[in-house]
Length: 617
Image (cartoon, rainbow, N blue to C red):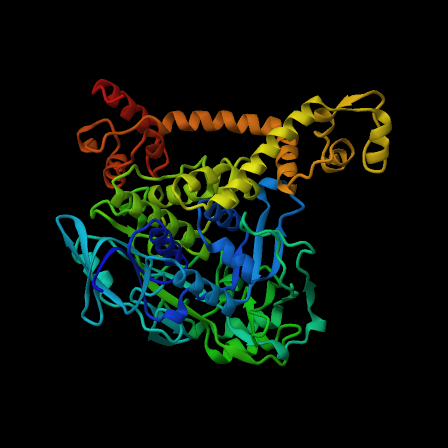
């Protein structure tokens, strides 16, 4: 079988989403991976979600992706983060059973019609008339294709470092992908090097848990997927401990043999997830650093030492770990290491994640300079959707910054200069009051259903939720609470009222909840998410109105489209830097142009005047 509609290269989180969406859309799809059993394998932390990342997972689910469903089936420690803060920055996270996650992910792939797994290595591509035509495999086989999506993770010319030792590998014990970068470079693509790392794993029975702090899961786990009714599998504890001054001294003694400090590693690493040696070097004033001990599964012997990513020599890793409280007799199962790999700066992409120079060739995941499973999956989904739409000759599918965190992610990737792996944060989203984890379905599920990626049963449940929200808003507007009922419900938590008061007014008090009132005035059962949505919209109505006005202004700039053939070099009043950046990125709107690093407000004014004179606007 040497001909497919769409070929996806790489079986990680981006590759899974891209391949499943392509095959679900009816296209004959090949997923090329080195080993079938490694599909969906978590190379680093066995967890899904987290701050801002949980929002991405919810959005992937609302568009018909599978990451949330897999996490719900394999999560062993669910936790809603930032519950002491406002809903806009709360995020779901789940520690998962690492082996089970890969098993279920592979089942999703294998059970998808039209999807074929090819165990091989992609070492090159053929491009004809600026269009992808073939993928070349290490076995010598050439696969004809109409579209290709590259989701190669850390495998492109990957090199692993541990102390002064280095070896070619894309992941511990796995071959790197060689030849593909060089092939793409020969076609004119620009590449670079980045670095990431992973901590050691230790035997679960070698830890003295009595000396650590227990981190309990939520009593009522909140699922990622809208289609998951309830998390039913047992939940387990995680544990917290800390480094100390002795730990830091041991780590510092290994700096002379660190690939990070000796210059062996040239690629930039993630600033917000640094190695432990980088942490104690950059934050030398801190007496300790938090370490999370996360068991990798129900039956796994391994514990992930979160917060201790390192590429120091084996003897230093062992001594440092044994200096930490509760880990005095720890047994190391796998050593930590750093991996350096090729990536392709994402200014070479359109907002669909299709490359600008080659038709129907898409990049998704770490190949674009991102870090994290969730960022990768989001890109894989968007690339898969747009590969399908290209073959159907239908309009592209894009999300902007006011639609979703996915829109923020892709917009940041293609418009900003990146000197380190990109990671999603809630602070990256200027419209985060609107882009909450709990309303991802309301924002995006209509789009997912229109694309044919949401099944009818799930969409019917979603429509019920939307109907409930409309009903609840009407109930709130017409309901008045008298002092007697108020005292019965809220006398212990809120200041009493002296006269009948509209429920809508009372709900603006932080301590007043809608649910107890509904139990008194309505017999209908409502989804908790429906109740929460109405309550949030009332409590934060002033802020939401202000944010919606900002979105309107944002979209006015987005609607000022820029022609593809505009020659920025002939606009003399533009600064040299702006001419270079605009010519390279080729923004599609004035709004996108405004977000490009190095393009100043004065340059936008010049550009606006030029466009009006040329009657482009």
